[in-house]
Image (cartoon, rainbow over all chains, first blue to last red):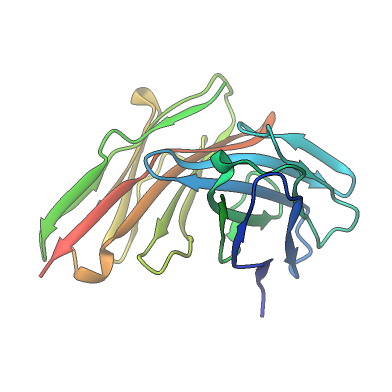
Length: 112
Length: 114
């Protein structure tokens, strides 16, 4: 089954404790992306990757890191999480940015 | 820079009414792509439609239809004879050929009452 998986689905952590949210796709997509969803703000792109080892900042990259060492995986790293990073996070993949995104189920992160 | 505006925050209708969701975009690129996604209460994001800037044909899919007008930079979405299952948040999105970013609007929450 074609899908994008994210783990964990829910995470409660404390300020400053490094965490990683994993994202994996099995559709051989070149383009992968991370978004955060906050009430009234819609989905905002954090980082995107056009292919392996090629990543770039979206609209809200501060406080986040990504890497794309393999085509299928695109982890999101929060080196020192802060409460303003409490949000719902979505990973997505597609052939390119010109095509529809396939979204993961979301990760709800709470930073206290 | 690219920008997507969905001016309607919330729309509430009674079942069987038609509802139109507005989407206005800004871009300097001549080649770009527009999308609509649906997010039902269960939370997943579901792709509905894609349009490229060279295809201004309106699209109809069942009770859903889309009106793309480059002259007004709008890509509006209409649900005909709405049903309770149409209750969701709907997002419009834009991507440009020369910029790999993807910009989403803030979303419109549609509530269909029985």
